[in-house]
Amino acid sequence: MAGGRALSPGRRLDRGLSLAELLVVAAIFLIMAAIAVPALQSADDAGGEVRRIFADAVRTRSLARTSWEATVFRMDIVTGRWRSERADGTPIPGPESDASGWRSLKVGVRFEAVLGTPWIFTFLPNGRGNERAAVRVVEGNSAWILELDPMSGALRAEEQ
Image 1 (tube, rainbow, N blue to C red):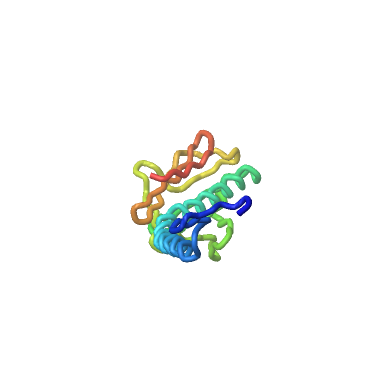
Image 2: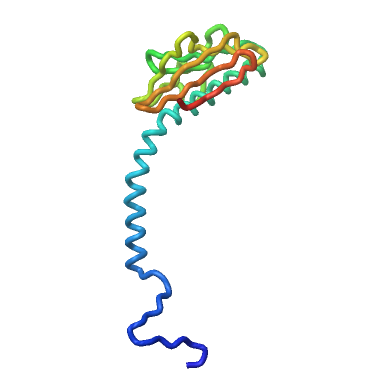
């Protein structure tokens, strides 16, 4: 044989994986993914809600800056709702809000008060806050804190 490799009897030249081996690996991967995805989705409910709340709080702060009037980001920790308002209490409608401007947390997610701090964020016309405010967003073992720094007006969301 010119340019070829001679094989001795009983010796096989492996050139890759067989179709059966590929199917076994794919099946194992799919089983592991089927187990992991639901666990990751339920653990992310609190984080997903924090992202929605954070976006609305940023929108409320931006409105205070652009309109040069104070705005309020109100969270109702008893009912698990939140909304943006003008200083006079007029609701500012947002995405997925009801007729009164309220949005609700997903089932299983709840607000908790942070001791010593209000859970109503007030933004001044310069975008800063009038006082430190914070709230916890909790679902199962997952907890996040959403906080307003009054000096800078910065909002911070951090997993605990």
